[in-house]
Structures are given as C-alpha cells and as structure tokens.
Amino acid sequence: IITLSDLECDYINARSCCSKLNKWVVPEVIGHAVVTVLMLISLHWFIFLLNLPVATWNIYRYIMVPSGNMGVFDPTEIHNRGQLKSHMKEAMIKLGFHLLCFFMYLYRLVSKVAQK
Image (cartoon, rainbow, N blue to C red; front, side):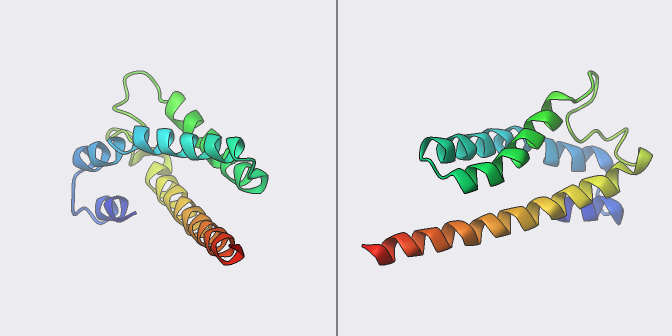
C-alpha cells in the first residue's frame, strides 16, 4: 500500500515501484497456497473455505500475466486503464482480509490453550 501510494504521489518512479512489488508476488502466492492446504489437511473447514477464494485469486492473477510484462505489476501499464487504483483497492482488501485472519487465528490459539 505504501509503495503504491508513493507511486501515486510521484515519490518513486513506476519501474522501481513495480520491481519492489513484483519480488513479493511469488512468495505471497506460495505462502497463501501453503496455508490454505494446511488448513485443508488439518480439517479447519471454515478457515480453509475463507482462504480458498483469496488463494485462487492470487494464483489466477499470477498465471494471467500477459507475455512481455515485467510481472503482475508492469511499469508501462500501471498508469493506464486505472490499474493503479485497482491495485490500491486490491491491496486494501487484502490488508482487511489478513487482519481478519490474524484475529481469527489468535482467537483460535487462545481458545485452544484455554481448553488445556
């Protein structure tokens, strides 16, 4: 969010912004897929079903990068067609999702410890 807002305010150029953001796309996809599979294996159905659409969206977004682009975030296209605003909206939604998941995981951890 901070990197995208810096780009929006012209504090950094599009190429450096996109290279910073693209280096975190693959670890995000792998990490979220691993967490989703672990929730399936451990039979936490609600959390698995909550994570599945986000993991699917991350994989879809990574797979659908057009050939010739630098990655999910491309410096030549980020200012075109309102992509900067859509990337900002997506980042805010993911932030809300991760905050929700953090507090759900924390509640689950505390409730499990309290049961013992």
